[in-house]
Image (cartoon, rainbow, N blue to C red; front, side, top):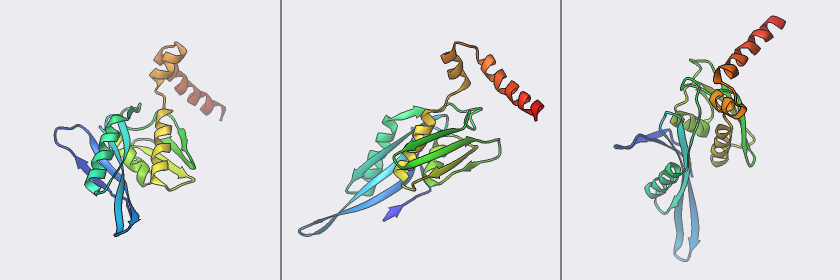
Length: 185
């Protein structure tokens, strides 16, 4: 039994939004019958650029969700966003057989992505992005591949610091490159 929920839970006294992505029910056959256990995959974010995911297992669904939420809060990453809306550049990520392609999008596009990826983008606070999952529909691998891609995301400030230049030089080059491409076409 797989549950893919569009369920948001906002906790009081917390700035985080958590999103239940997937619940898996497993059965262990014992002498008296079957023992059921539940595994939950949860994505947690502050909708301002921080996001994390967690996996929790327990005999009851609420306990599994609580464990997953706690695990997600422990391993959060910061994602640089352009104007707080979208990515700075296109990026690819992979985990196992799961591959994802994330593309920056103009304002008004919205989130165009599959279920598990959509949960990540909503909790991170991204409003415009186009994403495609290639290779697997397994929610665990899709979420891990999406996180791999988000970790590869660089802001102009990070690139400028790495190259020892000013941010204005990096950003002006990007717009100059677009002008040069238009002139040659």
